[in-house]
Length: 223
Image (cartoon, rainbow, N blue to C red; front, side, top):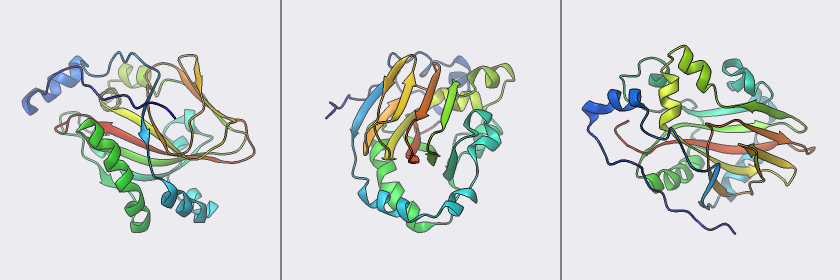
């Protein structure tokens, strides 16, 4: 069992008025000193049982990550929350809204999300279920930072502001994450803060689909 690592922030809280200057400076999270950081083990049994009841067409009807990010063309997602403000106006605080009407799924996901978010004394941003089909991989990438920065998209500031937490729900030992050349298999129910800034990739070398719950955490509630 992994040993939990306490959450710490690099800077003290600053006022809402400084929010935009703060984002432009990119003070926060620009240079994380880890590839993977274990947070804690979570009880995900009820969510896993529900996931197994979902039919393939349920995933197919949801937003495909590949429609927005070509890197994720091999993966499907059920988008649970969205943060439209991050793609429209960087002056507007990042506020998440539910993207689905499936209350049963929301009720199973949100207690897990809140338990993770409480570790940071923050709030949640985007939340989704990510499926990587059997035998597929997500190629080497760094979540579009270079593209977003070059084109001055506000999505860049959102990505620079969040911790991205992966919680495996359905997986096996043939699913391997590589971040900055460090390889790791993440076990069911483990919450991992993963540094998406350096180059990273995911391989599902098995004959079964892999499903993660992914949570973006904004560590300052006023962001």
